[in-house]
Length: 56
Image (tube, rainbow, N blue to C red; front, side, top):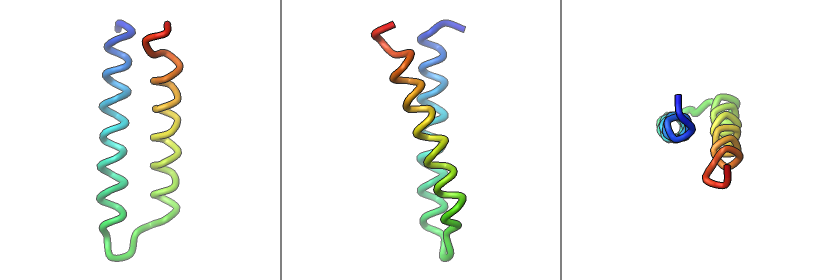
């Protein structure tokens, strides 16, 4: 997998997590612990995208 493919894969996962967060927050009784976990995962992915991004 090329570096660009890896970045695109991470961006797709990031978008998927964003959607999951939106769905969870729209529920009548959102699970705040689950939302926090999704946000942590999203942040880790964003950090990895930045780390391996265009400067490398």
